[in-house]
Length: 388
Image (tube, rainbow, N blue to C red; front, side, top):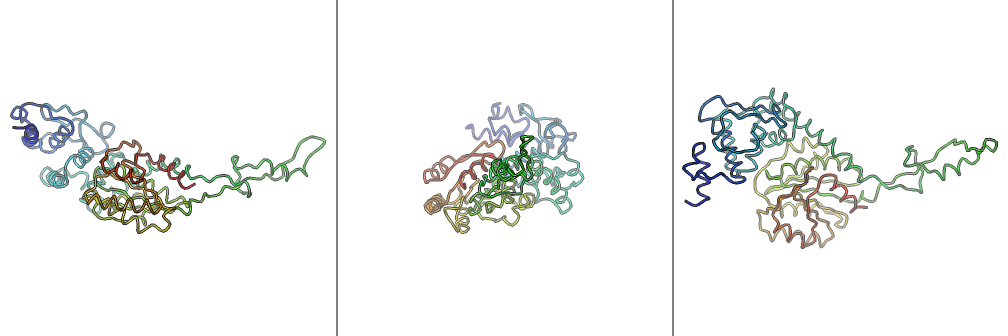
């Protein structure tokens, strides 16, 4: 039996299947898949399994799993939120649907989608946010309301961290030709203040009495004529980037200097610009999973372009194109030749750790697209440099 077949049989047999498949430890992600399957299907071996509720135990709610599969060397134990997150990262879509159905119907592992009280008690965290976004399609209206409140709490925490660095990148330059009534120290016009108050010079005391201080105005850069189109791949592997793209777009929306569009895509494109100011509403409308048609997303972005040389397309994707690659490259070439700037990001989050198809990314870069991975603050700095 070849190694790949042994690994698959090891996952099928579960606990006790090590000896029958050669006793070899499962490598890398296969070990994680084994852990996920054990978390659910080891319930067949009897009751007494102790599963943590979301937000309780450990940093992300981790606790002991009760009986564990022999030979499991997993670094951490799973909770329902982290289990859901791993399942969606490690398995194909049809397998995810079967695992979720077994969890809900066969093993009654339904706390996240049926228990609003549990969601209200849970400690907000990004792990729990990811779990909610992955299972919201299974929730009834009451649970959805509780989930929405939890999502809002987590998003507010993320906003608090990233809003200042994003906004600061677009602070206007000093305009030394026009006065301003905005009285802050960095705008103080010392020369004009002295000149306009010379009439108040006290020769006896040898001091200048400032009757009225003057301040510089700050002008908005010419970026108000720029259009930023953010396209976000909503495949399951891009969830962290989807979350940060929604938050970042909402901050951009509040900057009058730029016109922001936000669209998510799989094999079709959904324009969420109308909800751009509220990242919670944006995220609650995201449908994770499905195929990937990056070329189709760029085709849609092209319909939004009015002034190519004042347009930036921010494409957030793992570059795993599911549609014909020639279409994607053709649209990329056409947009760049028209004057549009394309920035392809393999990751947009606070860690900025990319995982992507290097072949497609390199071919887009060869056509003139910028490719990388950024934090929201780095993205704001990059955009501000382009629109000055």
